[in-house]
Length: 92
Image 1: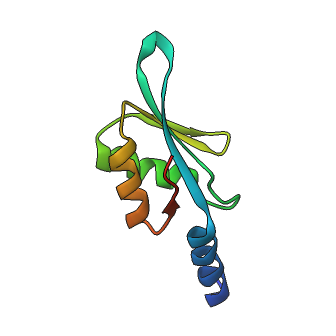
Image 2: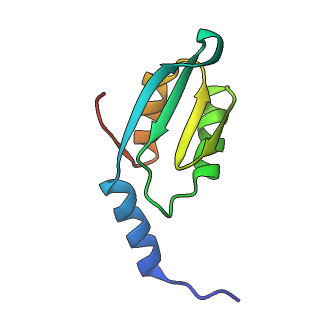
């Protein structure tokens, strides 16, 4: 049986709201567009967030070194999805 900690949920929500994410589109290998999302809190579950984004955007990608990399130019749609998850995304 696990202990229920209501403060943990509150602190996770506050971390999510205070984090300012940056979404940028870069040209990488073979001049293909790649969307890079950075600025997540240290305790964020990047694998879960990446999975949600990849599923909703129908694309591939990975989470590595505190960033999520999505294949393709998904800047605008990724911002919308992250804001729906409760994150603040800066205009860049």
